[in-house]
Image (tube, rainbow, N blue to C red):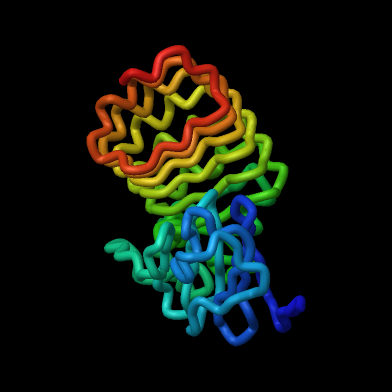
Length: 268
């Protein structure tokens, strides 16, 4: 018998599974659990009816290929994948977060930001709780997580100002140029699945990355990844990659998804 889930305020989709947030702040999942990505019921590969995995005052959710994030009202970020239960992530530069009040009391001489992309500006104003007025660099320094998915964005030049970001998701857009991301050296998690990427050389500066997803793009050269020695998880399915030798340097790598490429030699 099907079980309907009521009072849902947000749904995030991974690969063949769903994570939902209810009005009471609880988290629910259903779909394929073949990688135990729900963190519960690891003996079942498929959960057909919505199952609650956590109570709590959550206000925002996000899912990657086989992993999940959620943000609580207190600003804490929670992450889980595999058979691991949801766990709070320590972000040392995070006094506040999505859904929290981000105070903006800049000094008179603070630099204001002039956005070129109205979509990025709108999301920034939502996070800063500033519907009108100037946005300052001090405002952006308090944003450490940003999600801009399914927005038809092709220009991300405004992101160069977000130098304190530790989590960024740009899935399902039209992005081909990612040079502005080279400024975001505090990034730990980056999702740019399903875009138009071919050149990822700008990523070589992001040495703090531990999670990276670039599936469903047009990438052939991954030499930039060889410098990212803190990477633990890489998803680069559905690209045009031939040579994976740059990955030999990644001693911390635990998860690699690289199916449906053009690999000639995987003896690395």
